[in-house]
Image 1 (spheres, rainbow, N blue to C red):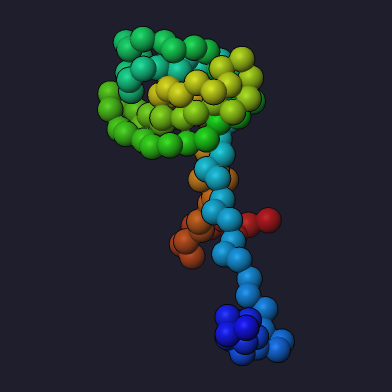
Image 2 (image 1 turned 45 degrees about the vertical axis):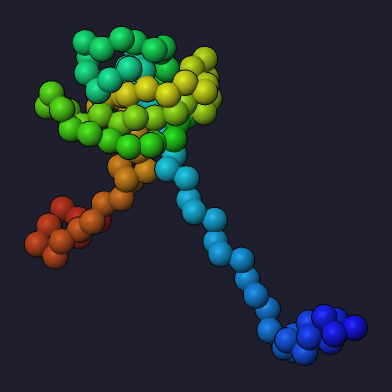
Length: 112
């Protein structure tokens, strides 16, 4: 009876507790006709599989080497689904690619 009374006394009429919003997944997809999933961030490393255009992935981390940014991704669709490997930046589309920030000095941003 004591625990029940304590719980009832803590309830506040009209108070609604909302759950924290779910964190957005870092979704990406292959934008080239095909892309090798590499074991390391290098074109000379072993290919773990091939992902094809529009196959979806989630980004895990990135590094810059050999003149390119490389992304370690896990494929979520397509023939390489479930595989994790490195993909070069020019072969992949990331959510950040859709974000464009205009500065007041950038005339091209302000013309319609």
